[in-house]
Amino acid sequence: MRVAGGLLLMVAAALIQVTWAAQLEIAGAFANLVLIAVVGLTWTQGVPAGLLWACAGGILLDLNAPGPLGPHALALLAGAYATGFWARNLDRDSPFHPAAAVVVSTILYSLVLIGADDALGLPVPPLRTAAQLTIAASLYNAALMPPALMALRRVTGGLHWEQTAA
Amino acid sequence: MESTARPRSTGRFLVLAAAMLALAALSQQSWAAGFRGTAKSALAPLEAQMMSLAAAAEHATAIFGDIASLRDQNQRLTAQNQDLKRQLAELNAAAYDNNELRNALDFQRSFGHRTVVAQVVGRGPDAFSHTLQIDRGSDDGLQAGMVVVSGAGLIGRVRETGPHGAIVQTLADPQSRANVFLSGSGLQGTVIGGPGALQVQIQHHVGSVPTKGEWAITSGVGGGYPRGLVVGMVVNVTHSDAATVDSALVDWVNDPATLSLVIVVTDFTPS
Image (cartoon, rainbow over all chains, first blue to last red; front, side, top):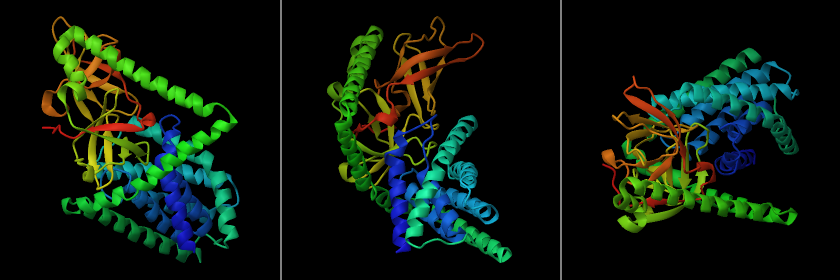
């Protein structure tokens, strides 16, 4: 049940990200719904669950990107791992911390993704452009994180999924 | 408790990261291309459904106002605008090389290229990948390297194919290159992709200076793209007598965010 629910969430987030969200660009960036879902699941379900869902969500994103499977999963893993540190050590009920965690995760995600793409010979944007896009995406994701986490808590709480961050 | 949990999480992270790196290395091999293409086109039908759903939702909102009709009107006007831009480019180019260029611009009519029309069902998953996912693949005759255009002009080329879907690398990709000439001055140059605006490096030629408002049109030099596809209008020129090349910004005739249908040229093989 938990696996099916998580998978459904990841597939929905990935599909919305590559279809609808991509049309709602702000300053060249758009919401990374899969990253938001991974951060949310790490926050509510713990690091082990977050890491596994990062792999699943990343592979779904890789299916929509040119090149091999794996770079997006690797980038999301970095985000989930960083979120784990945050969730373990800070007030998990505050809306500020998840928003800040998603900013850090977005920056790590972008760095890992660009690094992986560069290593694999895939196109990478110029540094300045990459920095601008990363900042815009961080802010976009941060704005969406508190309501997304609230919704996720309601769903996972209703299904008795709540768990402490390990 | 926490001190044991942290190393365990770190261990899991490292194992999973290694697994993803191994997956990337394996799926990049040429023998895995078929599997990768099949896996990638598996989501295309779902994405097409999502796009249809979005279109249906847009129509549903019409009952709350005239948004849908205004959008339709906007799309029609955008299409008309693109068509007018193309016609203007044709006329402008005709002044330079009337007969040959007009034939080249309307490649479908004059060159008789075989084409496949595809629906855009998705876009790259992040702002760094300037790609489009389309609902036609190798089963429809598509191959990597084929040129992709719209009614307005050049979009890019097919990068990967699966049986029922393909990924198109657009001109906005930083690694995209297209050799062009300018419709007014006839100067040759290379368009370099970029997310903000397309840049064109123009070779110096005695007595000719690139000017704002000229059309950048594929020259066919290098064999990467057929001659005569409109890329965009020159909007800003940086000229220096001391430099060997001038640089200019090109306003691309296509906006990937609004593209819903594309045309794949299936009988042009890039050299």
